[in-house]
Image (cartoon, rainbow, N blue to C red):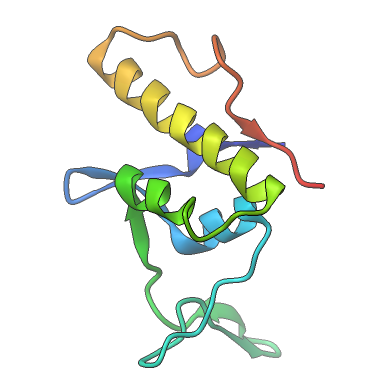
Length: 111
């Protein structure tokens, strides 16, 4: 089980999620665009695996827009959980919400 709040990061003052974390929650692979791959690893024996390019990040609004593209039942349930997690993080930071472990479940289970 994955606690989604742990996948939300702050970048340049915005709460964001990384493309490969979203792909894992939606149970899809990241795609290659025309200029470069969004998530490519170098697999060199003895040297380990390294991320070749910096990941793309998605704000809460960007994640909401993904729901119009990804329409599987898994993606829909993951999107709902992610939106709830963003709300809980925002409320927690404002001091009006409950702690991470209380309230609405924002866990995502892998099938």
